[in-house]
Amino acid sequence: MKYLKVIAFTHKQIELKELGRLVICQEDLTEKLQQVKSQFEIDEIFYLPTCNRVEFVLVTDQVVDAAYTQRFIDALHIGVCNHYMGVFLKGASIYEDQEALNHLLRISCSLESLIIGEKEILPQLRKAYESCREAGLTGDFLRMTMNCVVKAAKEVYTDTNISKNPISVVSLAYRKLRDLKLGTNARVLIIGAGETNLNISKYLQKHKFTNFAVFNRTVAKAETLAADLSGEAFGLEALKDYNKGFDAIITCTSSVEPIITPELYTSLLNGETDKKTIVDLAVPNDTHPDVVANFPINFIEVHSLNEVAKRNLQERYEELVHAEAIIQQNIAEFITMLKQRRIELAMRHVPEKIKEIRNNAINTVFADEVKGMDAQNREILEKVINYMEKKYISVPMIMAKEILINSQH
Image 1 (cartoon, rainbow, N blue to C red):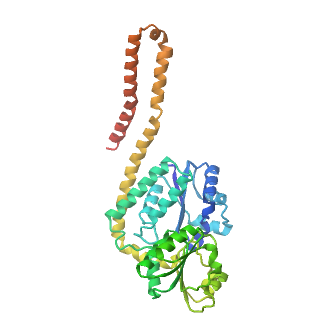
Image 2: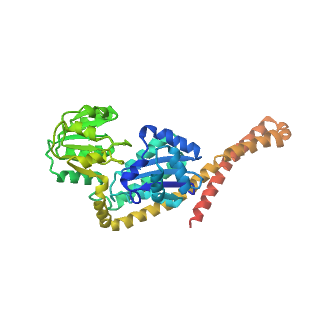
């Protein structure tokens, strides 16, 4: 497991507003990851961006340190200037071997989340991995790793109370939104049709909100979410021409640049002057700072939920201890499975080698003797050799597994 490495940039060391500078545009993601995979001779890679972290999971024999991280980020060509490169290198956490696996398991169980106990992180992690797997960026090792990650997370959520009365960024945002006492007929613009907005939309729907307009880069996704909400669907470019006004905007996209600029916001107001609400759960924020500074707005963002998150952590301390015990058990199981897998891979060549020995014996070493045998004896010899060949193939695997099992005791 010494080749498993993780480069992590998280809310614990880096401000969320700065963290957004590391987000890679979805359209360029596969190309950029393929490029660094080749350039840095990385065997497998996947990229995990969420509302409070950007992480790179690598399988490589290279030494991953601050110097490597700087070269790696530079090679992604995402426009990180020298100042922010210094910030990111200072705040980066680098894990390898068992520490890397432990970190991934803690992420999947939400122990590293802004909100301990929220379940959104596991599907985000799986989605990030699947996207890279489909692009051919991962292989057998990360497949096994992700199986372990998912198994551990399910056990933690099932066997502990860490997610009892679950608190998530989305639920906290909705609570703040609910405290503003918007009427159920409030005009709600939803920008982005990803998982976060899908989840917050469920809260709104549950509490009888009825007036929605959904905007998304892919119109088909906007139409799917709008159909669930009995609302209207538009492409993202339609925002600049939308003139029906609004009471609240809920936005979460993967854009690396602000979507709600002062000009767009003024256009969306359509002459209205009352105080509006923006729920911005994107990292980096979809809302330009000048909009927040220069207009009367109730602004709800991930960063403002930190204090609630800290209290949540204190309340769940006992469950954390139980969850960490489950994680350690899964790490121990994974190490054994990894050894077994390495034996299986090593033994793949045994049948070929045995066939080579068999053919060499018959056709070269004992060729003259075999030629001198009659048909009946040759048939018997073939049967004996075939029988022995089949048995020999299984012997090394059985013995290796027995040695492995006995070494655990």
